[in-house]
Length: 130
Image (cartoon, rainbow, N blue to C red; front, side, top):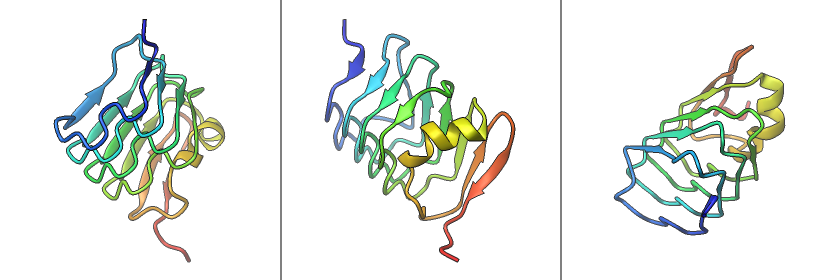
């Protein structure tokens, strides 16, 4: 039984989207699994997803919204780089959990502001370097 999405599984696949919701038996998303999927707009990461590897969603330019149900899901760095349309993250955990487990997956200075809604706080990751 496959527990994770294989590396480069749908690399440059324009048939993924506008929404992606994983089956419950998936617990990991490997490196570049969905990189450059240009039609992906909304991503649902269910509570059973435990880890997401580098560049898994790199370059998904239409990705606007991410829902994260597992606050203990760990993300490697650069999971969501070059996702220029990303503006909203709904995170079912505290800001402290977000900072520890998910923040490194995002670019340090995104293309535009990203609003993050946690269970205890809503804040903005600014696109400004000032």
